[in-house]
Image (cartoon, rainbow, N blue to C red):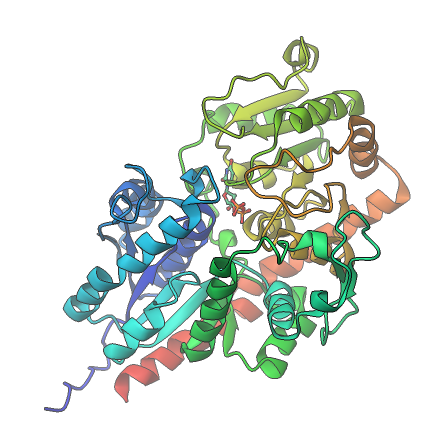
Length: 491
Ligand code: UDP
């Protein structure tokens, strides 16, 4: 029997299935809100423990009448060998837990297919690690889009490394930065990296290599790729990704710019550990561009010795700062603060433990710099707010983002170690307090170069804002994607 014709007034229904990690759920919830704001029905699929935060993030939109819903799917973490209560990648405390988490995500395929059968959405956007979603949607003839919380530069560079493996022909001596550096083949700019900035290939488990391969295959076999970036930020890389690498991609960011109200900016991911009104009042009392925001994202942990150096560097810089501190383990004692530190920096230093209302902070005019681990969401939020960065990458795409910020768009200055590290940061060389003080004072100071970087940051921020306004490049790309889906459903 032929399928029933789709009526002209049919409301397109999109399923959004984010990978269960704060930095992947936050932007995808915003994508769901973006589709709902364009008149689509958006259904976010997530697991029981993540559902509460996700529901809170879309509550205001629901109340304003948008068609946005949350559908719960079970998470078989315990069956996959994880401790009870872990449904988010951020809660992983050892590298060994990683494959188990991915196994649990794979086991979600079957219940997800039941949901597809039951609801028959018009198209699906699923996070990049849910590689099986391409196959699942194909069973029902539903187009699947891959969502990347990453930029075109990283996607292009990563694919070049996967295909050409330039690091295989050079020395593996990680102690000598120069002897281990290589050029990433085929990119629009000459980009050099060192083997220390990517996971060591002798250590790199088959699991990581396999996952990269699966992601790449699912990209090629999917209907297309949604990228949280905007064309004007990286035109050469957007073109390279689409034309040279042949990926069908839409740039629809910066997605976080959807959050115009303070309530939306404050309610992202988890509940903030500090009252947002207090933070705003604190920032209101500071001069424009005078506060440095320091945060290393939702996953990275910095060891006590490094935190101590950071505390000393921030103190001696004399700058005002907001510092979000997250330790290696939740129950670690706070040994890292120098004696009397909080007393001495009272009034000019604000420490937030665990989760900060980041978007609200970055968008405040008092914030003039962001010391960041270079997670793409944080970087793009900083770009959107026009705040120049001090880069401190640790793992995954963060080293690529570091290069992108400091060498391609020139909106930041480097500080962090040049070695890849994840969770167990004990073996990484320390960045000493005098270097921290110097870099912070440079970025927050009145020197000509720093002033120019601030000016450039404001110009890029203006471009970002224009791209998501009606008539802008990201707005237009989202429109073309929705139109394409309308036509597709009528075929
Ligand atoms: N975030 C936040 N408060 C925090 C830490 C992070 O709101 O205290 C948000 C931040 O705004 C960003 C996301 O969490 O949207 C972190 O994603 P990113 O890609 O920067 O880094 P990751 O967490 O993956 O390392």
